[in-house]
Length: 115
Image (cartoon, rainbow, N blue to C red; front, side):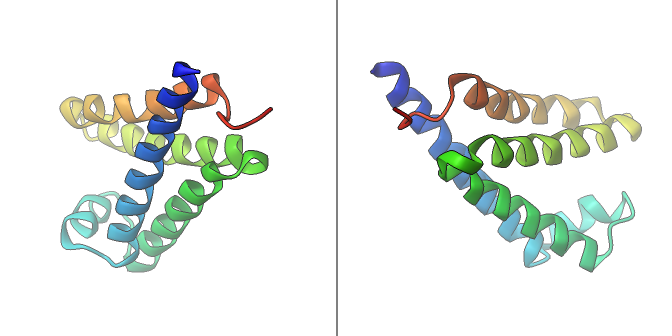
């Protein structure tokens, strides 16, 4: 029971962060544009990435799309980690690892409201 409550809170955190970051990308916030711009993302690419991040966050909420949403979110985080490692930005990559592990932990703990 306590594990389900903890997992539910972790899911809420992941969904909130996904929507927050996705919105920042979708609206083209300057810091997001600068970060992704150095990796060759133009405004359209950033908007598409933001939309996918928001969709992934929403998919996590529903039991039938729970794994797909977490998978998409983890893939997006892994993409960022790979770009940062390519730039030799190890600190930036290390900062992203807990967020990647969060999605993997949520998948491992499974959907909390499933019977």
